[in-house]
View 1 (cartoon, rainbow, N blue to C red):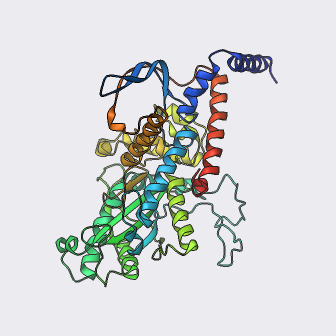
View 2: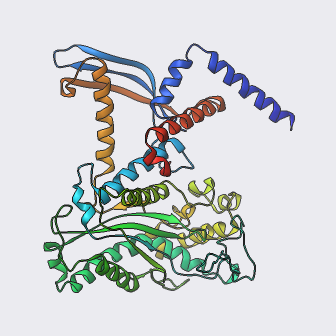
View 3: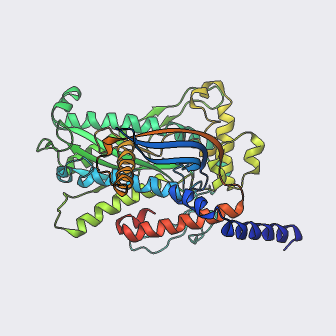
Length: 452
């Protein structure tokens, strides 16, 4: 161990000891706990007071506080991403079984858990198995173990269609949008209706999440639900079964296309979904069947888990690219580096300006939201967060002997003074506080353990 490293570690130990023994530790810890151990909180200075309608002040706060960064990526802030995942879990699950303002009758609607993938742009190293689960040789002729760093990378890098892969990635959100339109049209046709008549008989709702595969391309997982004309709680036509929805989704996926802009350098590409389309039926919810409720939690937990992930390459890929040299310096696989470099180069062509590929090169060209939902699927993040704030506010007022929250007005005046902790000692303690908070939540809410 080098002398410089020993000296730095010694310095951090001293800072940690001083922080723990300081008179302001309790106050500092309370601030960290208030934001759940956020990895990079916003530091604020100012004041606020709570005042009743008759002018009586019941609480005053002055000085410095922390505000959570609210970054959804686990690689950037485990604490905030865990909260985001928990909210996602509730958002998805109440669209499956009801709750949070959604009627329980949604559990009786036809529902599918679907997966749409990207097409092939060249053979990659993988771990194929037989139906019985027995390992088979990769196309390269070898057997790969699960931690082999070559998995997902091209067998022939020189022949891999990186241009096609990046353009597909950049158009994936548009491909999904057109897919949802096509599903509605195919459904209307299957029910003997004109497309514009469908909303008078049935409505499609969905919540989807994007997940990066090892080859660096996203695929989409989605819960798709078919309701009656007024949305949740209304009954769809008798002919609109889960089997019909399955067939409609498969036919729509096979026929949806997007054409990339024409380019004198790389030409134009017709972009489609991959051949693999999975549709898993979600059977009607029976409140008395524990197995069904577990399945609903598993689906919600699965979607929530991937809503907090980045590219799955390294934390460096969560950082926007500044230059070609930046790409060369990143600690990523050569395959990811080639994807970023391709996105960067294509982003310099005027015909691809609208795709903003250089801005999204760190995401390997993908420029969509990781989680999206249709308006009628379920509740919203805003509603969930508002309910959480109101609950905390009511709990604090109850401790002051006030039951009616409408009787109190909050007046705040805060300004930002900085971002993050002052040194590694504070960061280490905040991380420990975040871990403890997460364990407490798992113990208190076992149903959320799979998404944490």
